[in-house]
Image (cartoon, rainbow, N blue to C red; front, side):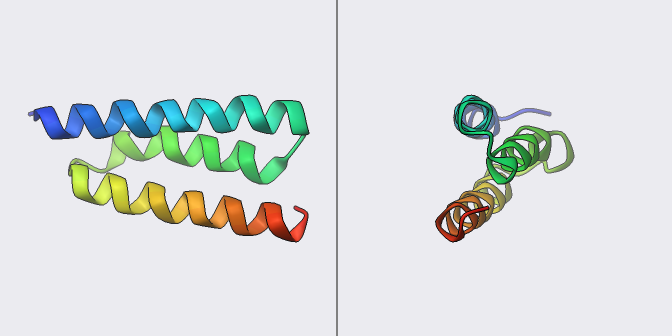
Length: 71
């Protein structure tokens, strides 16, 4: 059911999501907090390491873009 690449991708993106959680709480940034939730939840619904990585990269870019705009 779980491959090594899936577990590694989930670990990496979940850790980055935890970093967004800490950043969002300290900066009181709603976009970072929502990005954190999306990054941690995506591994429950997607079973491919490639798709997890692509989705989390898109979420990361969205959070970065929103942070630059002041959200």
